[in-house]
Image 1 (cartoon, one colour):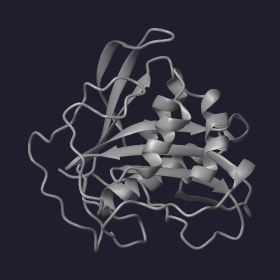
Image 2 (cartoon, one colour; image 1 turned 90 degrees about the vertical axis):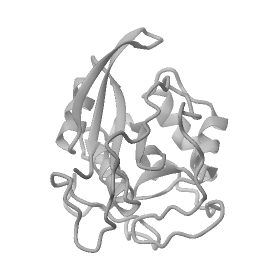
Image 3 (cartoon, rainbow, N blue to C red; image 1 turned 180 degrees about the vertical axis):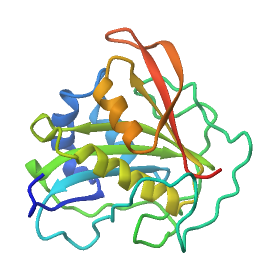
Image 4 (cartoon, one colour; image 1 turned 135 degrees about the vertical axis):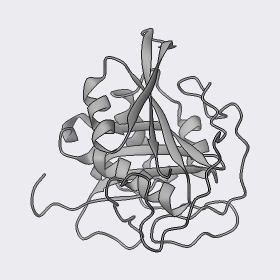
Length: 227
């Protein structure tokens, strides 16, 4: 990445959807629809961010955090009391949004650098077009979260954008006192598996025939944010 380049993450808005759909068509199988993405933008339980190539970094950009350190909270970070068996909803299929075993929480989650506010999110209009390099969607439950989607534009891969997005998700999870983040990735996607491992995730199992189009096993991974 260029020394003077500024990459920041910020909440996705409906105006970003055309660019998100362009990136998604080359990265995700099976692809999501516009309505599925819009549902995540307006959901109080979703953390949906885009990575943007821009300088100067605008007000409202989300800070990036480092890799989790063996579940030890940082100074000033909310303490977590994680049950031994936190609800996980791990029977979800690729592309699903209403994950089994999950219930909507009141719209009071906090974003890095912000305070939690009641009510539904109301994203501001801010068309960023081709400056959007990638996106990430995290869906939270009471104690943990599922990383539903992450994608980076082909022209911006191998530049650290994926790690920037993941660290934004880790910052959100820590701020909201979540215990862990779960994900599935195609077994053949070795670069993605390496990316996740480099950002604190570990493999927990292989799910046979999890993916369709084409059919493939999934590697299930987890990043535990507290002991």
